[in-house]
Amino acid sequence: MVVAIFLVLFGAASLGIQRHYEYYHFSTEVNELIDDLHYAKQMSITEQKHYAIKFDYVDNGYSVIKYINDSVEKVKSKNFSHGVSIFDIDNYQEAKFTFFGAVFKSGEVKAVKNSDEKIISIKPSGFIHVERIDVN
Image (cartoon, rainbow, N blue to C red; front, side, top):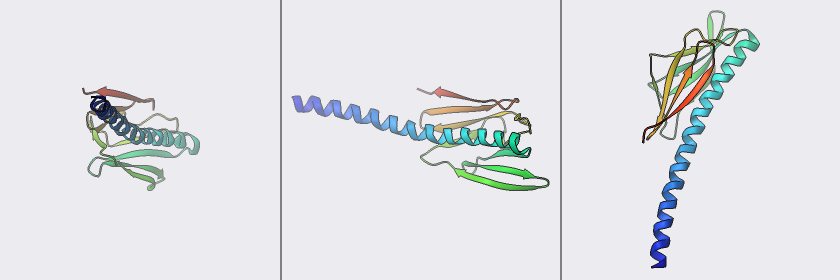
């Protein structure tokens, strides 16, 4: 009887640990995107060059782009892993920052893994807001 109770408790605990582990990886992926948005914003201010995050919804990733006069330099590319997917909410293809840290066009992107969702909003001022949506 004691062994059966222990096995039930162990099974329940392992499911909880697995769920926490999956959410940790999801949060890590989303936090990297947020860090890259902050990086692009800061570099636009510091270098007085336009930086942007260009979203690729087909390949499930994004690129950090630096605009130099009429050319474009790719600084970093990232494809999401661990079952994380991104979706555009309002046809938001690029978060391009001005020399003052604002964006030319505001918008939202949704990151999803299983039943977890996060909405990343980039406001006209360049403020980046993340909202967790609990689907359950």
